[in-house]
Image (cartoon, rainbow, N blue to C red; front, side, top):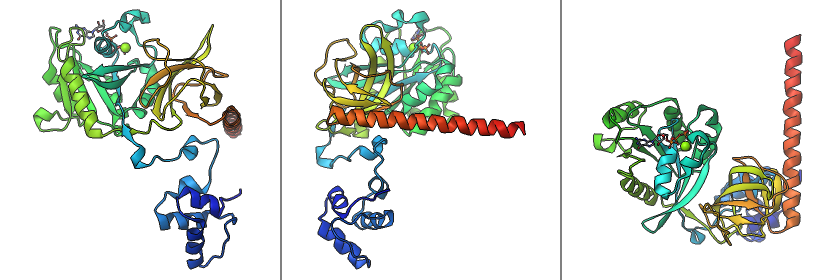
Length: 370
Ligand code: GTP
Ligand code: MG
């Protein structure tokens, strides 16, 4: 593998090549501006200037993390929070989101069970909040894990007439693993037999001690059906979000995560993307997982065409060569040619990884037979 040159490294760390040459000279190595540095030399320079060497030493073009340039502090502006709603099946996640959106998604769903992660942006007292709805059904662990990863805040919905159930516990685990603040929405308080205090006791056993009991977790009693307490819940969300001081840089090429993707008979592959940073536009050359293309049509959660999608905005796009997978990362590139090249390289790498795991498995099988 070829190393990064003195000149390239100097550019990356915002210092002159002369400075890099001098540091290496002091450490006993003579180099010129065009010398390709080895990993150890790169590490020394990075240590000297306080950079993370991992990202600079070997740039893997199939790894988005290697390609994403860090933002400068002065380019960052506040962005909306991404809030994921989790909880056990039928505890009222979609009904809550529905009430918040003042629309009726739950009614249109097959059997009332959420089959996918819905992504919506709403206005709360003039401030945008992005919500992700997740299914409570046990088959969707991976989706919830993904939801937790792209989220800033997790709302755990627990039905007050039911209690802490398996997917409630799993949601707690996902939120803790993601290291994000948790707000507990104690739902269905309108129902006879609802016992919000019992929910607090049960949840406390999992380390979620309510503020009113001297802990640090915000609990809000609600009826998603009637709307009781929902405004207070929204205000709690904005308070927690403000404390997190979430920021992003809208003036850069977009990157983010696939929330869901499907093949539409008329429009081809359609992917719902959550922009994490930067701004996405129609016409942008893009790589999504191992697929690529050019953003053709871009629509918001209300179905309207969008000309741009800023950080924390969910959008559906068309224009990809194939259907990506939920949880895939996406990134915009400066030309169709680059997007195609990176997309193909990523597809090739994935194929190779799959070949490797299959051959590893067949070796295992072989050993098992011996
Ligand atoms: P999954 O997506 O399948 O995990 O379920 P969910 O958590 O999204 O539950 P959903 O919103 O579909 O609600 C399940 C049932 O509970 C529906 O019949 C709702 O009408 C009912 N429900 C939700 N919230 C309340 C509430 O506050 N009070 C009452 N009485 N019923 C509610
Ligand atoms: Mg639902």
